Image 1 (tube, rainbow, N blue to C red):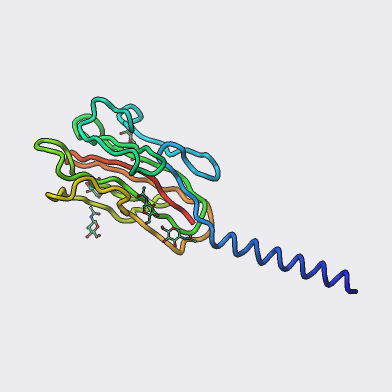
Image 2 (cartoon, protein in one colour):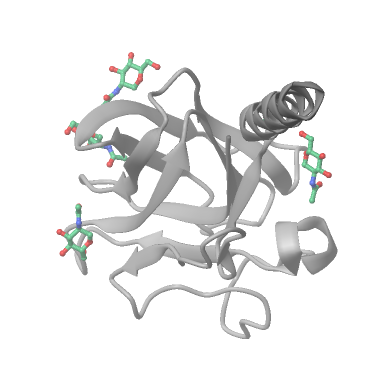
Length: 177
Ligand SMILES: *[C@@H]1O[C@H](CO)[C@@H](O)[C@H](O)[C@H]1NC(C)=O
Ligand SMILES: *[C@@H]1O[C@H](CO)[C@@H](O)[C@H](O)[C@H]1NC(C)=O
Ligand SMILES: *[C@@H]1O[C@H](CO)[C@@H](O)[C@H](O)[C@H]1NC(C)=O
Ligand SMILES: *[C@@H]1O[C@H](CO)[C@@H](O)[C@H](O)[C@H]1NC(C)=O
Ligand SMILES: *[C@@H]1O[C@H](CO)[C@@H](O)[C@H](O)[C@H]1NC(C)=O
């Protein structure tokens, strides 16, 4: 009797710990290193226009030490060259937070405008627009999207820029719960 109830206690205690851990865990999706849990990497389209640290022809120079995992994925959307510039990744969880790097004060003629639409599980779920402002410099770790309270399941997320306006897109990382 005693042994049996002890086992039951241990079982319940482990179930309790497991459920607390499951509720509390945040995981990262880095632009290059991908999902900290599954190693799955985001997909970038078109695939030949993206740059990160060490880019020599990029007009905007960034500070590696201020980017998550020391790197980022940036590209310029040019409506004459592509129909869409986009990033997609799956995540399995109930919340998602997405972080970009934004540009200001980079000089005349440099594209600093950022504009994207977000699509969650195939449905449009908001947009983000950044108009450059004098005196702000580069803004690292900029929160551009968040959603909470999703069903615990695998979700698909898409970030995309299309339409008539040239824009710069710099994805640094995402967090999901
Ligand atoms: C996960 O990260 C987000 C964004 O930083 C934060 O708001 C949230 O409280 C974190 N959740 C947990 C369980 O750590
Ligand atoms: C980004 O902001 C979070 C808090 O929101 C902080 O924990 C983290 O260290 C910041 N990362 C960088 C690279 O500044
Ligand atoms: C992503 O961009 C590529 C290249 O421009 C395009 O062919 C594709 O249709 C876009 N995907 C989505 C889901 O918008
Ligand atoms: C972008 O979001 C704002 C609200 O945040 C909304 O008023 C606007 O219509 C949206 N634009 C597009 C193109 O979806
Ligand atoms: C966002 O989506 C709306 C509606 O499809 C479109 O008119 C707009 O050009 C898109 N904006 C960007 C930045 O892709």
